[in-house]
Image (tube, rainbow, N blue to C red; front, side):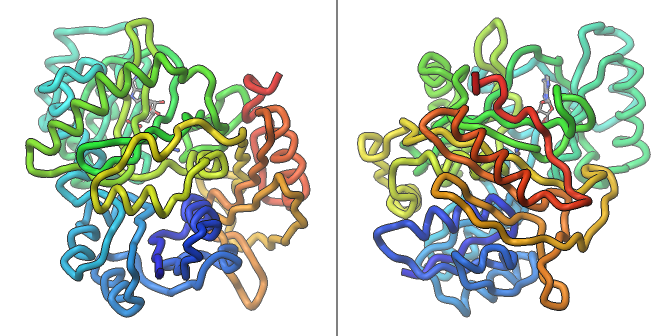
Length: 421
Ligand code: AMP
Ligand code: GLY
C-alpha cells in the first residue's frame, strides 16, 4: 500500500511515524516532508500549490493521501485527488469552510444551536465602530478575520479601543488582505481551553484522546500567541462529561448540518473548546490535525491509523473498533528559534540524538544545507516523551529537549507541569 502524507512539519512527521507502525507495512511518501523524516518516508520534492501537489500525487500513484495542513484542503486538494480515483483523507473545500471561513462556521453554529460566543459580522469599519460605541463592553472582545491567516487572524482585545484599532487595520488598511475583508466580532470567553479531535466519515465519528496545547511563547502563559509551544495528552480536564456534551451539542449537529448542506464532513475535525461556567463553547474549528497536538495524540493512540483513516474515507467508521482510551501519556516540548513568533534566525546547525524507548524526536522546521541538518522555520524540533503517567512522559520529553537544544533554540519549561504532580 502506498500512502502520501502532504505537508512538511512536526505534525506530518508524527503521522508518518504512526503509519510506519501499521501491520499493513505501507510504503510512505512525504510531500514534500523535511530531511528529519527520512527515517519514516521517501521525501518527494514539490511546491505547495494544489496543481503541483496533484501532479506529484499522480506520479506517485498512491492508494491513500493524508493531508496535513489546511491550505491545500481549502484549495480543493481532496476533490482533485478523488477525481483521479485516489482516496484522500481530509474534507473537501466545501466542508473545509468550517476552518477556512469563520463567518461560515459561526453562522452554521448559530443556525444549529451549537454553543459558541455571541457574535456579529462586519465588512464595513464604520458599521463595526457604530456597533462597538453603542454596545460598550468592558469584559473584552475577540476580533477574527474571516479567512485563513496562518494562525495570525484572531485578536483577543482587552478594550473597545483596541478592537477599533485592529478593525481599522483589517477593514481599512487591509493588513491581512482578502482574509480580513470580513470579520467576526465576538464576546471574549473565560475558562480553560482544550483541543478535541474527532475522526469523521461524514456521518459517524470517533474521538481521539484530548490534548492540551500551550499557545503562548513563554512560561506561565506569557508573551505572544504562537502555533503551539507544547502539548500533553490526555488532558484530564476534558473528561467524560465534557466529551459527552461536546459530542451531543457540537459534533453531532455539525456533521448533520454539513451533510444537509451537501458537504459531508470526512476527515479529522479539530474542535477548540473553552470550558466556561456555561459548559463547553466552541472557540474554533480546524479541518485538520492540530500541530503540536498530533505529536502527543498519535503516540497515545491504541488503534491502527490506516484502518481508521480508510474507514473515514470509505464510510462505515465503527465506533466500537476504535477506542478513544489513550494507551499511555505523552508530552511534547517544542524547540523554537529564538525570536519566534517574531523574526528569527534560520540555518541553526542541529544534531541527531540517541533516544530511549520512551522518546521520539519529530522534525518540524528543518532542512539540509551543504549536507548539514539545519533549522529553516520558527518551530524547529519536537521532543516527545511517553510514559505510564504524564509525569513520566514529561521527564522523558524534557531530558530529550535538553540534549537536543543548541544555541539559538529555546523551549518553555512548564509544559504539562500542572498535570505532572
Ligand atoms: P482562533 O484563531 O479562533 O483559534 O483563536 C486563537 C486563540 O484566541 C484561541 O486559541 C483562544 O486562545 C483565543 N480566543 C479565540 N476566541 C476566543 C473567545 N471568544 N474568547 C476568548 N479567547 C478566544
Ligand atoms: N496547535 C493549534 C493548531 O494546530 O491550530
